[in-house]
Image (cartoon, rainbow, N blue to C red; front, side, top):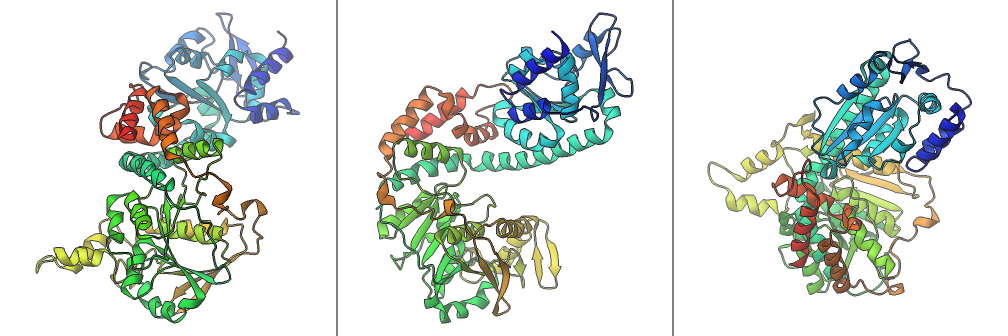
Length: 541
């Protein structure tokens, strides 16, 4: 084939998995920014890529040997995800792709460099391979986050051709920084999944069962009032009197930890938001629910006993959905059967305060106040008075290990960062504070937000945006839909799990992380089918 024919064939093949990059390459006017020049012919009559500094990427005497040695030290008999800097002529990659358990992501400097290679080497079979992906540095972060799934692909490694690295030192350093950043984030997510996935799996199924049984009355919110979101930070102690004095003009949305504190001060919240799935989170709600008018707003991943108790007490329950893949699968089922399914609320920050804020925004409130949203330990206090920890630590206190000792141990269990003489924080709390800032800065609603501090309300955010019509309202009338049919859903779920249906693979990935942590599954060698079997046993209980 001519250079033009090879180029067109490669672009056509690339469109299957990366149409955006294929379009960019096709429409390039020149390749001046390419790091490659014309290839050279080796002694073995093979074409070898040449960099613009004249150096060959493989030996011109025996390029095949160099290609074979490229992945030496990588155990190709185990599942691997390998990121490779430089496509070159792909000779160093094709050997690895003979193994079905190997995933390859090749990173090129830019579209111009890929285009130069596309003119001289036939990559069509490679580009059609489901285990192969190609991207440029500019799209590496998004591509890698989308492709690398530790539960499926096991070990990760990064390889680069030495001549390419020497010519593209800054680019290779940038690649390594991007991969490091992504791996840190993926590792953090994986760690959370490894610890909580079994709990989430249990909670989602029990909460879906409750969802199918709750009444379908439509929610209406008094959005002419100000929404007061109540966190459990120490500064809430100063805000209690203000809340009492202005109770009638506020729609009070308590976070789960703050709900009990308000009750201790004679304030019954209009709504309470909970996202934590751990057993300890139920301790916020051990006391009798004094007011059946309180709305319970619960993540499908939250502890199921909370929604079950609220339903039994006669309280309205509004579930919402996070981005757990089993929730997304259940939503797809509901859509296919024209059944009601809860709306989505932002829980990505991991803090219930931001989730409560998102609930208030999506309920339609335009004036919002934050109380107890400290994200810090103030005046040697972890929480406001009246949290569930007060009686817990009091019951366990002794002369030697007092209640104050227990609170100090809680606050200083991780390294602290001093903000001023009376306030310290931690990396986690700083991350929560940043999550609040990020949420507000990215919010498209027309919104005014105030924070109660030092006995007064201080404006902290004023948005001029108008809320897009497509986002209003998210609490659609439930009466437009049939109720969620849990009995039919669980039958379908069990059938897919029993048959190891690939359509359900994404839904069990968090559970796979938990199975690996507990020794039930090894991502580098075992089949994901073992996780299907464990998920089936859990769902059948």
